[in-house]
Image 1 (cartoon, rainbow, N blue to C red):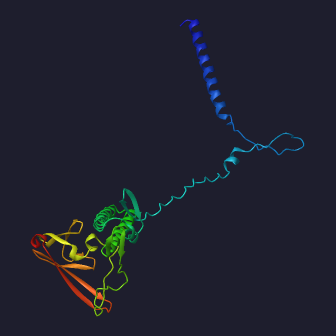
Image 2: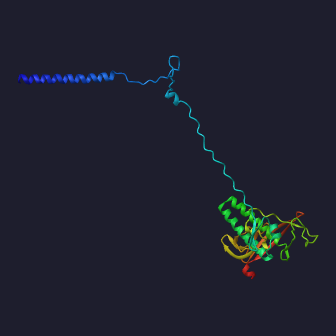
Length: 285
């Protein structure tokens, strides 16, 4: 090997040793150097030698302050709708007339006896249908209003039975409520009829003798009958079901008859059994 070549190799080796030493020395110094920390000092209170200086709040201290409570939005109370009152509305002389009670209607209406009775029966049927629909939807407000309408038109129907017209616009009304029947024998003990329950169905709101037996069918569970109310609404009944406005019940059903039993008390407490036989409507014809 030539002398020149050996010199170049030695120089190259020296350079490599110097470069390696410099690299490792920088690495060593980097590890030895302490990490830089940022210290924040609270400002000293203003004194004679520090005019105009204001204390600097520590961010750590500021973050430890309790957060202000968040107030929930206040929702105004819902206003309840006033309960609707049941009224009787008619059209008389081309004008709409409104009556607040059954007594007011019977006393002041200008309708004839036939028209008034037909109108009351029509509205009573509509009120009973509305009550059935409200009970199906379980709408408490609608149920309450429908019950008021049913009671109102039932009272009007009862009062119309004692109404006598002697001429246009003249009305005489005799109400037997809480009074003795003038046509009853003084020796006959008055009967005490049970009140109609508020949740009574349409079949429990009319006298038994006003119900019609339209059809009787037989099934594995026994006979069933289809009965019609005065407004021609049909209902299916079975043995033991309550019917009539006096608390009666169906005690027997045959191929052509429906038997209803009523237990009626008098003012002395004695119980009288009243059996009503309703024949099949087709057979009756």
